[in-house]
Image (tube, rainbow, N blue to C red; front, side, top):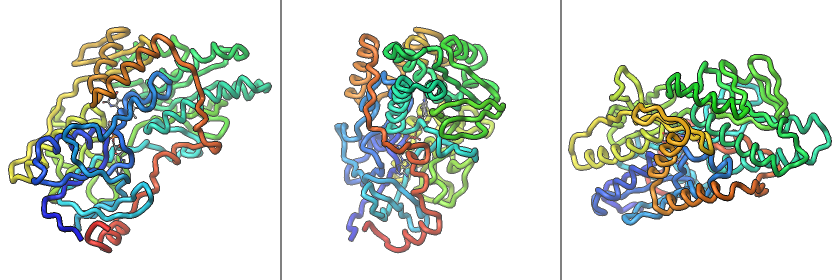
Length: 456
Ligand SMILES: Cc1cc2nc3c(=O)[nH]c(=O)nc-3n(C[C@H](O)[C@H](O)[C@H](O)COP(=O)(O)OP(=O)(O)OC[C@H]3O[C@@H](n4cnc5c(N)ncnc54)[C@H](O)[C@@H]3O)c2cc1C
């Protein structure tokens, strides 16, 4: 039986938003003011912007998996699992633990920060044949997959097979897709020197996007610089183009071209976590509609932020909502903690306002473009700003040291292009990594939450 009388704060998701929120709650609340619980499937916060560098082997996976248990004030209870539904009426969050048990977790305050999943479209073969770039497992998997294509092409006697294994397609010209294509192209370009039987001219990277520009938020001049860098490195950029269908050994573009390839990486945007739909509340393009204070109007004690929430962007105005970026998510995390504390203490909530600080895009090596505070930078200065920004945003000193050491080691010694063999024999694609079918319907949530009022 639950005998706790302190208010229960439940934070869902340990990403940029969730972890910042928990850390601030731990710092600002005394232990007898409230109990803080965090639901997370993983024991780390993933520093997503550096994921392409894991795929390309510049960083080891561990260096961007920042421990949740390394903190001086650490006192949060962590439930290892994923929230699969929230019943706002009975104030119960339904959780599937990592051992597949279903647990009802009651709360007084809930902070929803489950982030987003890869946005897909109804394109034949897409979810069966594309890889995503949203999780640590996907980045490690893609690295192994790309190196295995070189190994298999090298071993093959069939010119058609060789050609198809050495073509790679990345869909999505935002920063995630552009950095992924740029970093992986560098990987294959460097690796092919260790395969004397392979013709480097056969290696071809395609970066495609339905939009007319890459990373439009960079502006015309800087966007063109980024395109120029990629084109110089041999990446073929096709704009105004998408995928018509995907198969195991070829991809058909909407302009009719058929590309023989075994590698389709899909990074064409994100949508809010399916958890949001289980609430049955109002959404804006799938993100939970919240007030500028990040609370759910009309529902006491419910807050949402980060990629999963439509937080009004008061700095921009005109009804804009904050873009799904780490920059906003981590600031919203701190801010939402202040608002949870304010509601707990009966004080007024404050609206979230943050003016965008700009964008940094690491294209690997000394190639980069950045726009900090509106200043356009290219090459080494842009790279210094990009890496400096990410490095300082890593939460623990141990993570900072790991990342810096990896960067230095990679700059001095390069990559060994080792295929770890962790890749399953059966291909794992988008649908296998994002667990999108784990969630309940609003009716199932109500039935489950109503079935027991407390933690089981
Ligand atoms: C490749 C890549 C590069 C990027 N580069 C940049 C960049 O340069 N700059 C920038 O500002 N942004 C960048 N972003 C975007 C940025 O990473 C996201 O906007 C940011 O991570 C959002 O923070 P969040 O806390 O909302 O979600 P996340 O950081 O994704 O965290 C969500 C957390 O919730 C957990 N979770 C998911 N579902 C559940 C559930 N049902 N129950 C419990 N926990 C759950 C997840 O495991 C995760 O830990 C990039 C993203 C990608 C994929």
